[in-house]
Every structure is written in structure tokens, then in C-alpha cells.
Length: 188
Image (cartoon, rainbow, N blue to C red):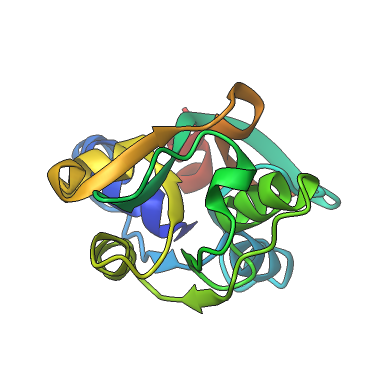
């Protein structure tokens, strides 16, 4: 089962706990990655299913919405309020690599106003992203649910994003036509 870091941290623990109580004979191996990387792994038969963030082209995949996420913008506590893309001018973007759908969402929001990040610092965990943002190295986007799990609200300035940008749906995807008892149990 593939999953984004955010889903693994904030959404999967209760789901997997419930799953293992009902199906103790099923062994699940988790693989984390960006939505883009996970979609490739599903399409290339490397994993059976994955939790990924919209938007993506579902060609050859079946899709089931799983979780609604509110995305927020984070920066250092001494940062002036960021309410528009122009407020983020001349800042570095701290994010997962280019396959990250949340990163793409932030870059599209900034890009629509012709605001380009000063640079992009790519990191591999939310803890590292939060630490760099808190230190003043740049701004980042993340689900509010993850921010609550890492308990870093006091160390960061947290800004709401406009409704279309702030809404994200995490979906469970699998290859069209693929069926198994384990997948059906996960979908239920």
C-alpha cells in the first residue's frame, strides 16, 4: 500500500488499526512517496493501491475519495501575514520533490499571480520541512491535520489559503480491474 507522508502521519494510524483488528491475517507493507511517484508504482504493478492527493489523470485507475484535507501555508513566526501570492514574493519554497501534489498546488497559486519562489528547497519529511520553515528558511504548504500531528503550531505562523487552493481530497487508487479481498476490505 502506497501513501503520502501526510496520510501516513495523520490519517492511516486509526484506519490501519481497525483494519488489522478485523483482518489480522493480512500483512500490509507501506511505501511512502509523493502522489506522482505512487501513481507510477500503482500503474507499474509495484504496489496494489495508494493514497494520493488530487488532481491527477486517473487513466487506467479506479478512484475512491478517502479524506478531505485543508491545506495551510506556514512560515516563520516573525513573517508578515501572507494572504496573497504577492505577500510570498522573494521567499523560498520548502517542499517535497516535484511529484508532490501539495507543492504543485502552492506553485500554481503563486504562478497564477506571476510569483516565482526565490528557490525550492526539497526535503523528505514534514519534520524537516517544519524545522526549516520555523528557522526562517522559507514557506511551505501542508495539510492542517499534519500540522496538528507534528504539534508545531506554536513554532510557526499559519495562514489560511483561499478556498479553492485550501481544499484537497486524498483518494485511494488502484489499477482498473484489480480486485482482492484485502483491497475490498480496505475500501470498505
